[in-house]
Amino acid sequence: KNSLTYPAIVLAVIIGVLLFMVIGVVPQVQQLYHDLGKDLPAITNILVALTNFLVNMWWLVTIVLGLIIYFVFQFVRTDSGRHILAKVKLNVPVFKLMFWRLYNGRFARTAENLLSTGVSIQDTLAISAEAINNLIMEEEIKEVSEKVKQGKTLSASLKELDYILPLLPQMAAIGEESGKIDEMLGKAANVYEDELDQQINTISTLIEPIMLVIMTLMVAVIIAGVLMPIYQLVSQIQK
Image (cartoon, rainbow, N blue to C red):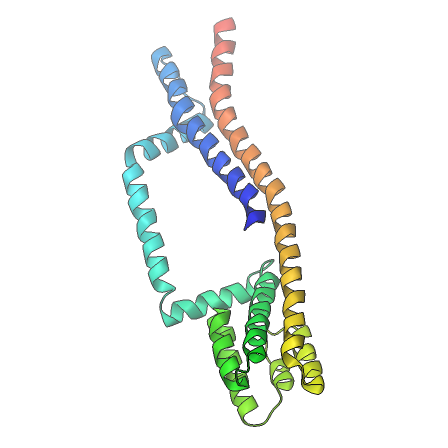
């Protein structure tokens, strides 16, 4: 979360600058052209239309956004919504490995804590499945629980799952042989948590320059929409 603080601040600055330029500066340019009886350039006309829409219809934008957010939150609370969201997280480009590490680490850490306190393997799998907070992986871990109940080893059952990273069943196998499966799962959790922290830091580092480039381009468009008509007026006056 700390790694994403700076990009969030940059995004807030971008929004603030854009709103100031669109709502505070563009109308003044429009009024200047209106007083002189001149036609605005195309790019400025677009900005003026956007300004008028935001100023006059802000209540509609707020209502629509509010309704969209409300219905999205309601949808993801349903079984079908949870399933779709879970699948998106596990397959979304760039971020999917981050989610895999998060869920694998969460499962391993929860299982370690429960097994170390003497909780049975069946109860451990049931509780750990819910702790993952991803419906698809929760269903997969419950399948593991059934296989373990039938006599299959935890490591072999985990190895068959689509979203379990290789280290987890490997460490589980070592733990089964040594009789210290909780410790081995804890070590796997440590690895996943460290890798997750590194990946979040990397993504945060990449997001910052991308957002700055986007901000620069958007501000450049708005400045062009403001300065272009002023430059044209000056040129006409000089003529």
